[in-house]
Length: 121
Image 1 (cartoon, helix red, strand yellow):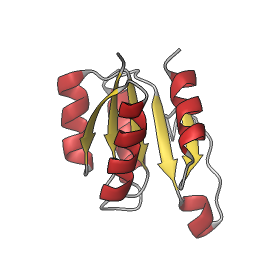
Image 2 (tube, rainbow, N blue to C red):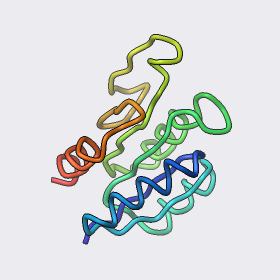
Image 3 (cartoon, one colour):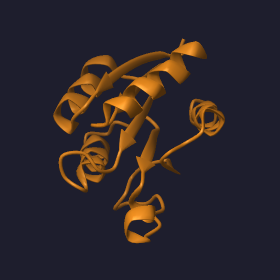
């Protein structure tokens, strides 16, 4: 059973994501801020990280992803974002934003599961 860390300050998103993933036989650990998110990743070595871009600060998710990569944590990261809707910007993966996939919130359960399965291969 794959372990997935979900890091998002929106408790509704945390709970909904957990429900979808646990109903599909994934184990979930969660955090509602970047510091706790960092700690659960370091302590539990999840198979996948689902990370929100905007938490306490508008770019918390970016900084956490960069920090994890600087520490050679290569766990796939799926980043939740609503930035493109808010500011009209699109993001792609790369050195500045070291994540494997971006998805726009809100995300359907089907799309979430498709992305999760792809990233866990």
